[in-house]
Image (cartoon, rainbow, N blue to C red; front, top):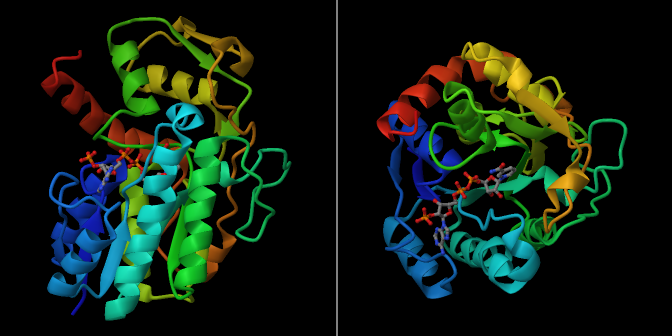
Length: 292
Ligand SMILES: NC(=O)c1ccc[n+]([C@@H]2O[C@H](COP(=O)([O-])OP(=O)(O)OC[C@H]3O[C@@H](n4cnc5c(N)ncnc54)[C@H](OP(=O)(O)O)[C@@H]3O)[C@@H](O)[C@H]2O)c1
């Protein structure tokens, strides 16, 4: 019988993982950050020793990409040190780990989708902190799983898709970059993927997962406006430089999912079909929040 300790259960991805654990009737516990701070080695070790999970799923992270430029140490506390704490705790009780990482470990200069062994070279400090976490985990506990994903969105938490749905439903204009290409990832699909790792237990290591297909952020915004019946002419294409963001973003983020498919993990739906299936729930959520 699997027993899962979930960190980050209140985030975009974590809420969907939590929902899947409930649906699959997997025994789990998901302490809130106010109850368990994963930056504390003692707290993580004590909790894990008491609960005795067979798996730890880590969806907790510092995800403020621009904020990491000025607060690199704080970002590393969560994206590197906390991951080391989790590895230490898991090793002590021989439990397995699924840790989530990012396409931002790559520099975006490739012209073909990144495979798991592609050369890493982060171009911002968030990416650097996440890469440090991956490396620390694999060095400390090589039997672990790292799932790299990109452009994550979901019903919960602040994310691009939700922001654009709000603008579309309010008939507001949106200025969106068209010089970054990647693949959106539905948190529901990735959550199903993480559960499939637990069920199937493929060879440990790094796996890529995003939805299938590719688009720019601009094309994604257009698809959202069209899907909710708003006027796509309200979406204006701009280039990344005009946003003056603190952190540089990779211009190409596509991840190759062949390793995932060969391991016969969960299905990899096309991004448009996943978007269509999640949009009604996002609209309902925005209505409940009073934002539309
Ligand atoms: N968002 C994206 O576009 C994207 C893209 C690629 C990869 N990823 C990766 O995907 C994973 C999930 O990201 P997400 O967007 O779902 O994250 P998120 O929505 O920002 O959620 C972060 C989670 O971390 C928890 N957390 C923060 N500090 C903590 C602490 N000290 N102790 C314990 N928990 C703490 C938060 O809890 P509280 O709510 O209590 O603060 C929250 O549940 C991350 O590894 C991220 O790097 C994200």
